[in-house]
Length: 199
Image 1 (cartoon, rainbow, N blue to C red):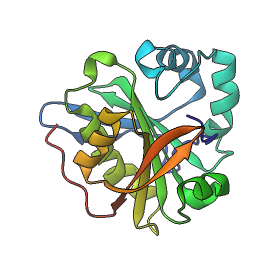
Image 2 (image 1 turned 180 degrees about the horizontal axis):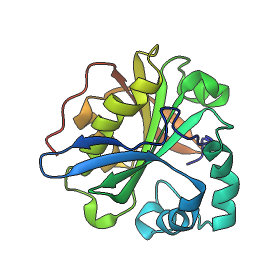
Image 3 (image 1 turned 120 degrees about the vertical axis):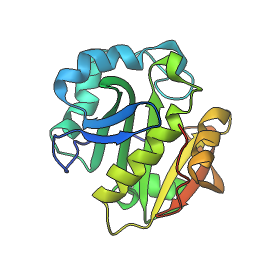
Image 4 (image 1 turned 120 degrees about the horizontal axis):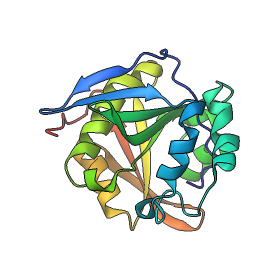
């Protein structure tokens, strides 16, 4: 994604974190090394090329990039989101201050950051993005960082669906910034300000 953000396993343990939408159960679990083969295939799907995995990747590259996080060697927590037990998305969270270069890029030094994607294209546009993000923030991200009060998320200007999804959860525009040459929008959510998704 250009931030050179490493990924990390969930310190809350390896038990899935469960939550319900109106019709389906969303489960979060840590990304593990045995996921890398499938994760590589997911990352290479065409709909992710524009804003997330901008170049094709390999299982070797995925293992090199994500492996340290899975082993708990970096400050980022990474998870798969499952719908009724089947993986459909990926999320990660981290303390902004753990990445000084990223903090300088967005002009913030406190709070946490979150990134996400849905790798099943037929699940896009059905309210699952807002449901997934809402529950991840409530049940995982803020729980992992109880001393942080704010969460930030960045989207390229052209990723209208992405930043509108974040706004539907309660994120508010803060400022524009540039990431790897791409004009982007920084949005922020205060702990406790989430709009409960109807997804």
